[in-house]
Image 1: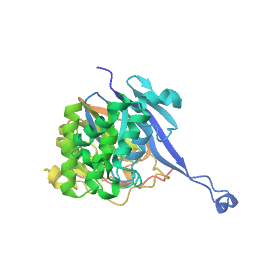
Image 2 (image 1 turned 135 degrees about the vertical axis):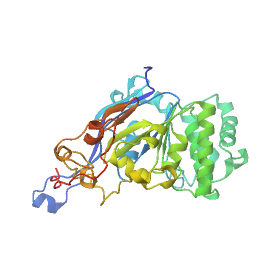
Image 3 (image 1 turned 120 degrees about the vertical axis):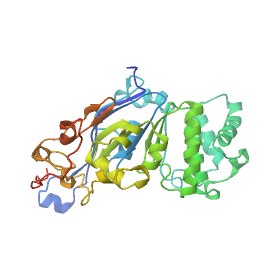
Length: 346
């Protein structure tokens, strides 16, 4: 296989919580949020990988660790064969132009005191993109490229709608001609009609510029439309990864099936619906064994004690589920198994 543009190996990011005086007095152990807890995947050049899951599963933290906006605790992030985790700040600078991000909130991601043209010119100046005399022309081209007018350069973010601000955020990301674009829920803060416009813009840019994209979202309809592959994340780990149409046609993990069951527009097999019971466990108190077992109707004794690893069940289709990997042809049982008592958390 050709070398992927991006390869993540066993990435870990935990956030220790501050201890209060009462915690110290009672000698309580320090609690830790295990936001990303051993994630691995590959992303080929020119492809788009959709990363989906419930809020709080670690999707955005994973994206920020890849960009080194957060420093990971363990693991590797290999970009073009280079492990970014081993680079110091000076060595990392050339890679900043090759990787860019579009943030979720178009209102908070732009400086309200800075005109849009100045925002884009600042990026070009800092990274020395093009000759100084050509940068204003490039700034105007960027605005045109995302569906705005060069005359908008003198306006401030407060003069734009949410969709227009997100277009400006995309223009800022494209200013340095990146190879990889991480889009962190870029549509979630926008009205539905505006979402369609920004989605089409991303599709057009991917085609015209040959971008490789990590698209983080909880909207399965958008992911199916935009992405070549999908990775499903639950409580800090990837539980299923497959080509998009394969995952939507043949989901194997019960959590994936439950997510699809909640969106009738993308799921046409109601007989296979799996209800999710309860709330996700806290990332500070990860259950032993399979992380999904407290909410899973198909759990068996093994799920309570042993954490499943991602295993290949079809060509280019991986799943972390003891039941699914034990039944590669038939998939999940036809009826819920007897539910043993939930294992203690640890």
